[in-house]
Length: 207
Image (tube, rainbow, N blue to C red; front, top):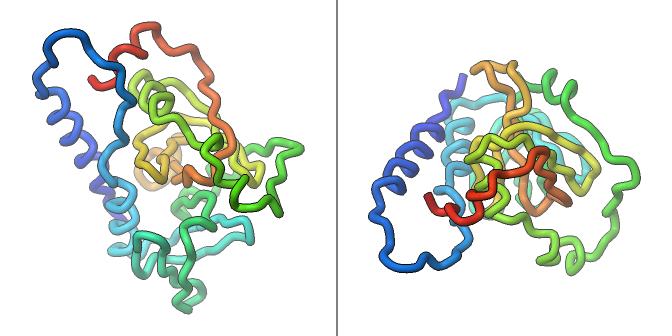
């Protein structure tokens, strides 16, 4: 059973940020930076423990363990066969132990179909998620709903995010009491905040 070390890494990073001295004079508006690459730490933990995982792509579902993580692709063991999978093909993945919760919580938006769209449109900058919205929703514990390009929808609370992935807690089951999915940001079509953020959040994005 894998023991995630990412929570401790995130808390350590937040402690360092809290100790940063306040800037003098008028604050400049800057977008918040994503967290450290906790996604790499997470997948490395699963590779080390050989955690049974489910990886969902536009081509289908892969039940596998992680043989080796990489910058642009993962090497997965699928039915005992090493299988390289490009990260750009991934929509989301989760631990096999959370499969029942995922099946219960997943939704689908009717009419969403990006199959066959050219890469120039599919990965256009207008589809990119806002770091600020991710940061605010995580900090204020605002429930969010992600709609994926393959029409899947997930609702929950953001645990962490990086430039490429988001860990979303979707339920209260699983091996550690919380079921979660790792969403790949390039595969997200829309993010909806299900509660209004507090007014002051926009001006304290780097706390």
